[in-house]
Length: 264
Image 1 (tube, helix red, strand yellow):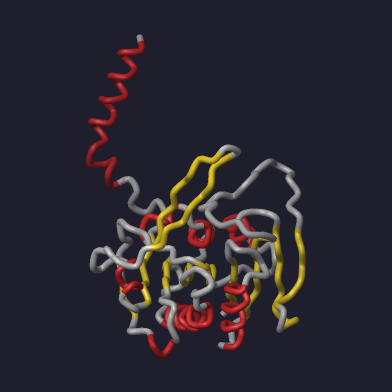
Image 2: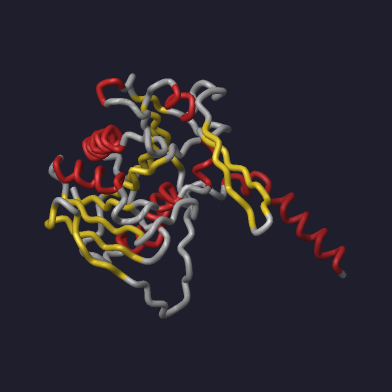
C-alpha cells in the first residue's frame, strides 16, 4: 500500500520520522511530503494560491532510510497533501497518515489543527486516512502513537475502509499499557485551551492543558482514561449537503425575497 506521510511540524519532526519508519517496517511503500518548517494551527489553509506562484522545495530522504523519499515544501500542510494526492511526486497515495502530532487534537481544537487540516485536504482530493496525535513534549509518546498508526492503517486496508477520515489520539503510555481503542465523538472540550495576554509590545499566547472534566463517550474522555480515541470525521463530499436545504428551501427563498424588497 502506498502511504503518504505528512504533518504540520516540519519534515524533520520526531513524530513524522517515527511514524514513517514504523510504516516502512510494516512493509508499506512510504513517501513523505511535508512543510519545510513548523506550521501548527493553520487548519486547512493552503496559503497563497496565486497563479504561477513558485513554492520552494527540498528533496531529501528519511534520516535512517535513504530509500524513503522526503519532499519538503514551503507551504501549509493542506497544500502538501493536495500536491501529493495530485500525483506531483509520483503515483498518488492510497492512504494518508498525518502526524504524529505533539498535542492531542480533540474536541474543538481540531478546527485549528493543521494535522487534521492536511487529512481534510487529502479527502477532498479523494484520498482518506488518519490524523494521529499524542501529548505535548516532553511527555508525548511518539513511539506508542506510531505503533497505533500502523495498526490503524492496516485495519483500514484490511477492511477496505481507506476512504474514511479518522482522527486518532493516543495516550502517553507504553503500548502495552494502552487500555484499548474507543470509538468516540468529538467533545465540546479539548485537552488544552489557549488564552492571550496583552503586553507592551504585543500579545503572549498561553496554553493550559486539561486532564479531566470531559463528557463520557468523547475523544478527550477516552484519552484521559487511557484509551486510544478514534473519531470518524466527515469531509466536504457534498453527498447529502442539500438535505437541510430541501427541508427549508421555501423559507430560505422567502428570506431572500424579503431582503430584496427591503432594499428597493
